[in-house]
Length: 204
Image (cartoon, rainbow, N blue to C red; front, side):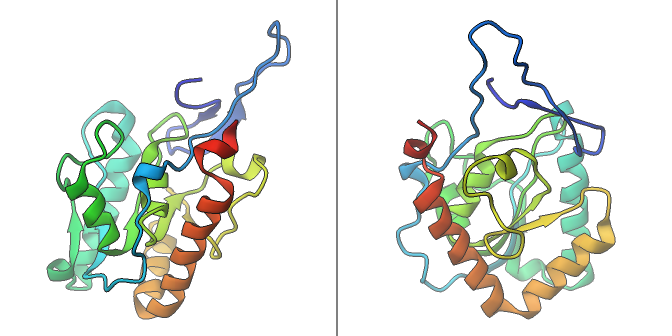
C-alpha cells in the first residue's frame, strides 16, 4: 500500500482495516518509518520555537489538517504566543522529497510539534520527521502504530489527541507548555524509541 491500509471517516477517525487474507499470496502491510536523513543529532540544544505546526491546508486530503491548523492558530492567539510559535510552511514545507535542511532545522528548534495524518488514510513522513527532531509530538490518534511490535505509548513517547475534541487539544497544549521539562522528556523518549524500534531497517 502506498499510503495506508486503514479506512478513516470524515473526522480522520479509524473505521476499519482494509487488508484481506483472501488475496493470493497474502498481504504484508507495513508502516512508514524513521530515516537516517531525518535524525537530529543534537536534541539537547536550546530550542527557541515553542509551538510548530507546518501542516498545509487546501487539498481534499488536508480537510482535517485544516481544522488542526485553525485550532493551533486559535490557541496561539488566545495565549499570546505568536512571537514564539510558527504555523505554516518553513523552507519547502516538508522533507520527504529532498530532506530540506531549512525545514528540518526548524523542527529541531521546536519544543512542541503539532501534526496530523491526511484525511481518509493514515501514514505520512511528517510524524517521523517530528519524532526524529526530538520535540514533543502531538498527533491525531492512530491505529497502525498500535498493531506493530513496540507500539507508541500515549504521554510516554508522544501525545495523541482527538480530532473531534478541541477542548482536549487545548488542554494538552496548555499542560505541556506549562510543564516544559515533562514535554522535553517525552520528546526525547519518542526520539530514542524511534531510533531503537522504528527506523527503515526495522520494517524489513
